Image 1 (tube, rainbow, N blue to C red):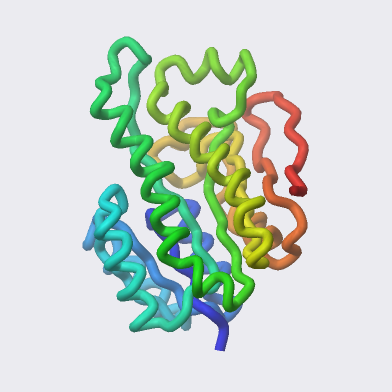
Image 2 (image 1 turned 30 degrees about the horizontal axis):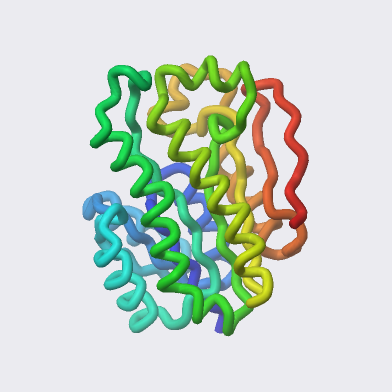
Length: 239
C-alpha cells in the first residue's frame, strides 16, 4: 500500500486537484483545513470516486494543533509519504495600511506552520524517501513588475517570498535524508476559484496538480512555474 499524502490547507481549487491526482494513483489522502462543511463535502466527493480519504479539522496557524493533527493522520491512515503545503491567508492592503498583526498571521501560516508540519512529518518522510510539495505564487519573485503589482497584496507577497526561501533551504536540508522538496509557482489566477472569476490569465487546478505529480515522481527539479500572467523568466531550481 502506498504512503499517505497529507494535504494542509484544503480548498476546492489546487488542493482538491492534488487530492484527486494522488488519490487516483493509490495514495490515501488526508485533508486538513478549518472549514468542517467544506471538508465533509470533499471527503464525500473523493470517496465516491474510489479514493481513500479522511478529513481533519485544524487551525494550521497553531503549531500545537499541527503536531496533534499530524499524529492523528498517522494513526488513522498510516505513515506520511508526501506533505503538500497549500496554506495562505487572503489579505489585501499595502504596507502602510496592513496591520502588523495581519502580517504576522500571514507569516505564521506560510512559514512557521509549514516548518512545523515538516518537522512533525520528517521521520515518516525519511523512511519512505518521501516528498514535500509546496504551492507558491508569482509574487514570491523579486521582479520590478511583480513588486509593483504586489503593492496592494503586501502581506501575501512578503509571506510567500519567505515561504519560497524556506523551501529552497529545506531542499538542501532534507536532501541528505533523501526527502525531495518541490514547489509549483503559480503565475496567474486559479481557474474555478473566487480569485479567478472574470480573469483571463487563469491556470487550471488539474494542470497544477500534474506538475506536483511530476515533481514527486521525477525527483529532479525543485521549482517549476505554471501560467504566464506576468511575463517573467524563471528557471527551475535543481539543487
